Amino acid sequence: MDAGLAKVEEKLHQAAALVHDLPFDRRFRAVSLASLVHALFYFTANHAPLGEPRLLEPTGLDRAMPFIPATVLIYVSAYALVFVAFLSLRRVENGTRFLAVFLSCVVVAGFIHWAMPTRFPRELFPLTADADPLSAFVLSAVRAVDTPSSCLPSLHVATSMAAAMLVHRERPKLSWGLLAWAVAIAVSTLTTKQHYLVDVVTGTALAVVAMALVDVVNALRGRRVRGRRSARRHRSPRPARRPSPGSSTPASPSSP
Image (cartoon, rainbow, N blue to C red; front, side):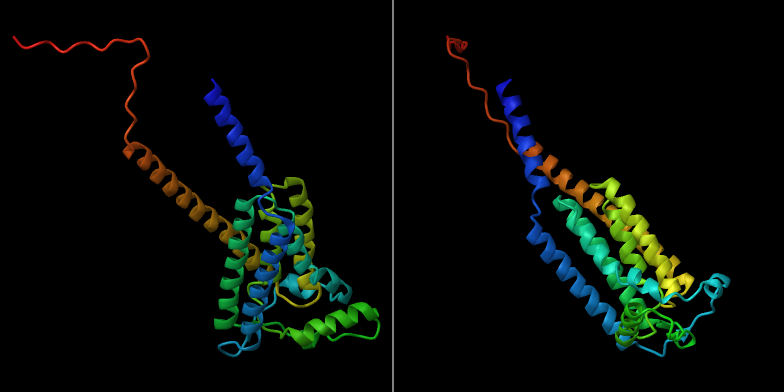
């Protein structure tokens, strides 16, 4: 009985340690480093694509979507969403899963941006004098740093959607709020004339596929680890049972 209680207490201590196994400073350093990798992959592909970026055929929704410079403030908040989502996680396995999915999206999208670049005709949507000063300044800065290529898939959409969905296991209520934020970011990619509708769709698909693949890999890895542990337990010899005090061992029969 005491051994069983001790085992339960040990498991509870392990669970408590797991919840607090990612202190804030480690989480902040991890997401900052991941964001630097994001910037490296994105801007390398954005400024040095393999070929000439090509224009895509806009859909009816692309043509109907108005140009609203003020929504650039929502657009640039995608970086903040990633930080908020990751910093809300406390469990190690959820943080590791987040980084694996986030970096998978960055690497895949970065390669596509570099190998098959596409661009949006921003020149058709110049900033006008009626735009408010803050929005005009931010959008001008974005357009100065970010070339019109690197459209498909939208990394703004992929990382925002992935971040919002990855929080659901640990913080389901927060996840819904982040998902609404990510949808607003997706819409802002159209109203700032940074992306086509197909970029939004493919960015969302990239987030879902990356998350599914990481979960499959983690499940297979976990199954392999459990199999090794089980095999190790079966191979280890069981200790011989000692006779209890007072018990008599049967005497061996004497030879005639």
